[in-house]
Length: 414
Image 1: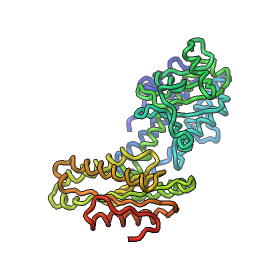
Image 2: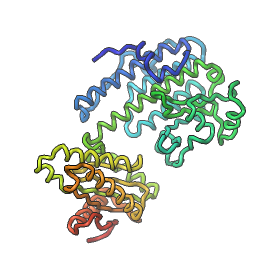
Image 3: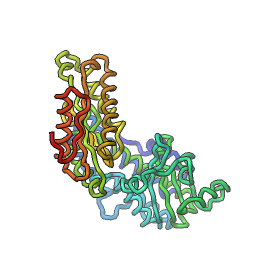
């Protein structure tokens, strides 16, 4: 493996390039953070590219981080610098030592809040991701998204201003100007510092703090250094999320494997039922793939499956689940939908997959797509029951030469 050059990382990283002049105490921490997280990412990417996605990834335990309370650089110097150094150490330890089960963004949100609170006297720490398509900011945790599903428009308020301009906000700064002061005063809750997380020249998120130590807020170099570390850690979480997604998805279609679908569907269904939310399961069956095999149109067959996965993945919400159950069967668990609305969404998915198959010249006329639907209704059927009903529905569509099967609900009978 090619050795990593810490100086080169610092010079070329778009995150660290925005940090400007950083307090001298932070350079060692930034260098070590960069080397550690980059090394872990390269190791994991190489294993994935070599086809070892189904194997457990190695545990990387650098010797410098074996202690209970890791320290990247000696805890000397002014108090604010020691606090920022401690945040660097906490984030580096989390990135290299921890592999949280479940939502990696929830775990990242927790470590950021705990580290800033413990070492920088930060209160009311919030992390937001930017959805450029919708033009909105959303909390990075699923619980936050459920509490505020609409998010914050980028075109409005102080947070929107920082997101759209990519410039940090510090309460009481001399260069705020009257317009920005009015935006700050108009917020439901005051913000002391808002840092734009930038990756590859684009603002991808925000870290907002309600209050923090006065010394930190007064030191521009420390803030920029801390912001650079937060941005670097954020970028590594994005990489970790992509790697984890690669480990649990079907390579050809990009949707979940059947095994991983079951692993994620059980807690998702339990959460929906706990919130008294209905769910819908849809099955999409592609008929005619065998004819493509027999006609030696293997590449066309693969393209049909690739485009099917893309069509499904791009049309479901972030907390819906799509999995490939068999060579020609795809299943989606759609949350917070009654059966009538689920049928409409299912028909849209059917249309998208049919169009995807038709776009492949050698396969379009030979592939028929059918849809099966099952809803939870007023009950709370288990996943196996919903799947059985949805597959019964798609079989009904096949035997009746229909595109859409009979809608099934808990307790329905043929």
